Image (cartoon, rainbow, N blue to C red; front, side, top):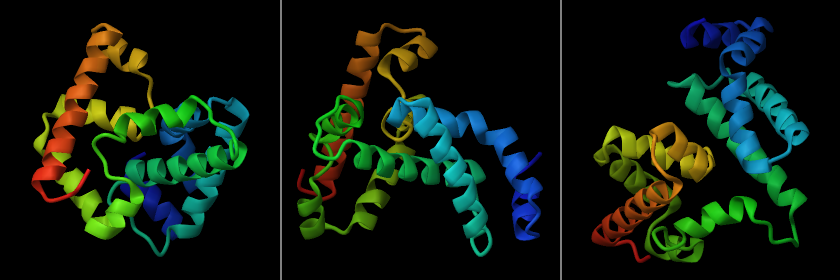
Length: 185
C-alpha cells in the first residue's frame, strides 16, 4: 500500500493503518531498533511503541515521508531504551557510533554556544545533500540507522577496512564543512 493511503487510514482512525504500516515498514523499523539495542525482545517492543506513537501523532501530523517519520520515532525510542538499560555502564554498542562522530560534530555544550541544534541539523543536511547518493546512503545507514561496517561493506562489495576508510573520509569531510560554516568542532 502507498504511504499516502496508509496516512489516510491514520487520519480516518482506521486500525488497519497499523497493520499496513507493519506490513510495509516492520522489517525496516526492527532493523533500526536491533542496530541500537542488539536485543530482539527490546527491539520488538520499541517497534510496537513506535506504532502507538505514530497512531497518537497522526493526526495532527501529516508526514511527508512515512518511512523517515517511523525511522525517527523508532530510533528515538530505541536510544531512550538503550540509555535506560545502560545508565551507569559503558557499552560498546551506540558509544562506538557516537565516538566515531566526536571528531566531526561539536559537543552539545559547544553547539549551544555556537549554534542551536536546529542550525547544526540544517548544516549537516546541506552537507549530506552535497554528497553523492552512495556516500549519503552509507553515512545515514551507519550513523542514523546504526548499521554495522561489516554489513555496509558486504552490501557495497568491499572489504570492511575499505568501508572504514570511506566512513573516515566522510566524517573528515563533514568536519571540514562544519568548520568552514563557522561551527567550532
